[in-house]
Image 1 (tube, rainbow, N blue to C red):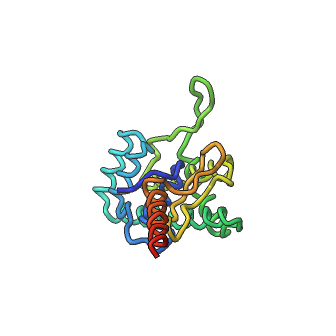
Image 2 (cartoon, rainbow, N blue to C red):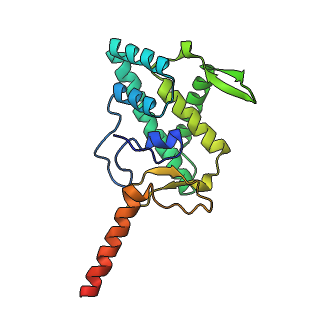
Image 3 (cartoon, rainbow, N blue to C red):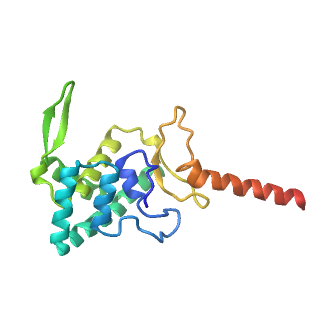
Amino acid sequence: MPFFFGGRLCLDFVNTVNCRSKPATKDYIPDMAALLGWCSQLTVFDAETLTRLQTIAEKNAPVAKAAHARATRFRETLFAIFQNTIIGEDPPKDALGALGELVSAGRQRQCLKKDAERFVWSWDKSRLDLDAPLLAVALSAEAMLIDGDLQRLKACPGPEGCGWLFYDETKNASRRWCSMEHCGGAAKARRHAARLREKRL
């Protein structure tokens, strides 16, 4: 099952493989059914919309396979953008272009509404198809890149860490690991064991 340490939808999406600091051996969203299940876990869309999308996927296997392939390709596009941003390099232009196109497509499937206190973008459910997860992730990435503090965009450090990405929301931006339970605790235990071995020598 996928983990949700990223703090942003787009980062959790990039983290849907079991490792980024070395070649991944497991994909947590291997098909469209798993991708829609991931959307359900994160409440990306309401239950009615997800049920409709699941029905579309079940009845149109080739369409679902193609949409899933687009999503997984975009996952690597986003990873390239975020990785370059973390190390202080410009993202690939083609990657930014792909993100921009998906952001535009996502906005075309939304409408601007006013709730009790502010204006918000809301999905036009009648226009959502199997690219909907991809578009939701693209809009999340746009929001983070434009409005976020990119100094807080980090990667769990390799080789001890998994390389997953996260948005550090600690007060003093001191978070280092994806989580202490997943990588931080294991690294700490390995260092402790190494110190014990040195003492025995």
